[in-house]
Amino acid sequence: MRDCDLIWNRAALDGGGIAPQRGDQALADVLVAHGLIMNGGVLHALELLDPNQVQRAASGMEYFGLAQASCVLLETLETLNRLGGSEKLEAEANARYWAVLADDTTLAERFEQVFVKHPGDFASLGDA
Image 1: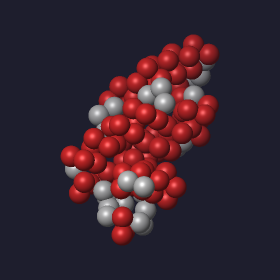
Image 2: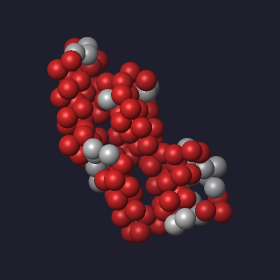
Image 3: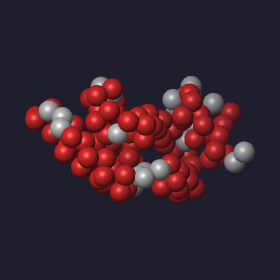
Image 4: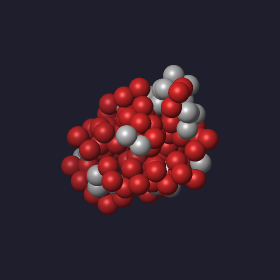
């Protein structure tokens, strides 16, 4: 396996590892939210995550250059808190999110780009 695959797996399975660096934590936070969204949609994720987890996921998305996905989470959470959920809100949030991150490919590509440019933002594999 490539180093980036091992780091991705560490983020997905171990929350970034025992001594996560900035990039590890960002990836782990994004993967928690992204997995929930891909399985049940944006509102599903927002109902299961606490506000701190949503903020961390949004910050992680920004770190990986996915500001539009970050905005979807934060704006949808604000609307959900203010007006409550609706089928229209759910459909719009899902469409906006999936326009940016329709699957794991874009996220994986962004992660790999950041990993190549800033490898020091990720703990060494010996620190798994």
